[in-house]
View (cartoon, rainbow, N blue to C red):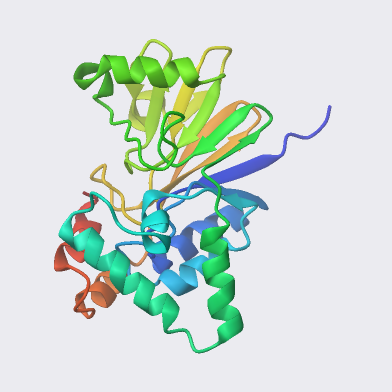
Length: 253
C-alpha cells in the first residue's frame, strides 16, 4: 500500500512572525514538507517582510483580502486594518535591496484567487468570492440562501480561512467546531467546507496558532502556542498599528 502523503494548510498569518515560525516548526517536526497557504500573509501584524519571505517556500499561496489591499487598495476596511495596510505597503517599499523588494512585490502580485488540486478547492474566503466572502459559523441562521449558493458552486471539498474561526460546514448546513468533533474530521462523499483557522490572529478565544494537517481523507486541527507577548510588544511599539491589534492576541478574539 502506498504511503499517504500528509500536507499542512495554513491561513491568516497576518504578519505575525512568532506564530508563523512556531507553526512552521511544528509542521517540520511532523515530517511534513508540503504546505499550502490560504492567504492574508500580511495585514494587522508587525513583520510583513519576514512572513512573506517564509511563505515563499510554500507550495502555493492564494490571495487574501489583506494581501489584495496591500497590492491594490483597501476597500471596506475598518480604520485599524486600513492603517495597517498603508503601513505594510510603506515597509515593503522601504526595503533597500531592490532584488528583495521586487521579489516580495512579485510574490504578492502573483497570488491567484484560488487553487484546485485533485478536485479539492483552496480559497481564502469561499467558492463564491474567493478573496472577500465570509462564511461565519452562524451563516445558516443569518443567510441560508448565501450558504446554499456557496454549496451549489462546490464540487466536493473546499478549504478556507478568512473568518479565523476553525471548523466544518457540512452539506446539511451545520457548522461543527473542532472541539465538537474531537479536533479531527474524516472527509466522506458529501460536500464539505473546512475552515483551517488562523496562524497569526486567532478569534475563537484560544490564543494559540491554528492550522490543519491533511492525510488522505483525515483532517486534523493543530494548535501551537507561540510567544504572543513578543508580537504584542512589537505592535505596541509601532505607532501606525492600533493597540487593539496587540491586545486581542492574548485573548484569541
